Length: 154
Image (cartoon, rainbow, N blue to C red; front, top):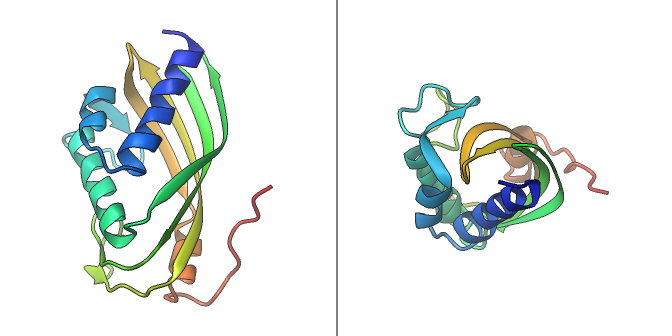
């Protein structure tokens, strides 16, 4: 696999799975043994990611991820993305932190949230994931925390 083909796989996941809701793409581009460093105890990465996409698209039916920057080196692809949408559906697990409310009802508010991803692509499949999102910014935009500005995107 080349760096460009690895980047194309990552782009496809965002375009087709997150932006279009095509969960079959997750099965095609992920391995059940994928190591998710933010959720290391999930028994199946593809099933967990499908639950995340489903939860996001339920809460934000107009969900869209724009990839702002993407770089690759060897098996690794890193990117900065911006998630936008309108909170018109319930926000549920697995997007909510443990111990918090089980559901956040729709607020009707627009959101703009920065994300960082680092993925290792092996044999055309996501083998490892590091992910950080501005969760505090999201909660503030939904009116659940004192207001704070979204991250400045240049």
